Image (tube, rainbow, N blue to C red; front, top):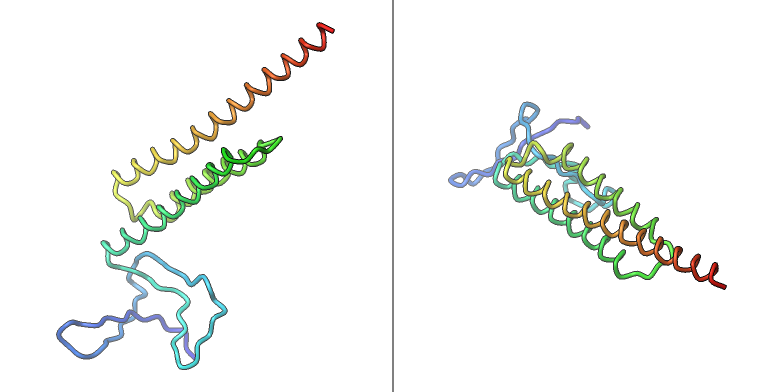
Length: 156
């Protein structure tokens, strides 16, 4: 079986589908999450390349929104839990934010406008600031509780 790549276009006026090779076309790549699913009498698709700019913008915005929601959920769980040592959770949150920043630069930067990039950078900066401020607050509380327990021990 040959490993050809094709672009499938369905034209509005015609009742047929034409096949074109798409090696020269560039676009946004989408791969399947479930690569093990094989359906009978179906075409197995490993990768889809989207070349419509408005559709690419919608896909990128959806993926970014999903990632930001995931980051907000991680940060909110840190606030809600009563761990004795939340440093591990804070480091995980900071690592996830950093990972998202790198992913944004590598994958999505080419498909976003400058305004979208600036807005996204501000959102990521807010998330980073929130985590670092919470870490600073916890560190201050520990320092105060340590100092008060030390003063209580000296008074005895």
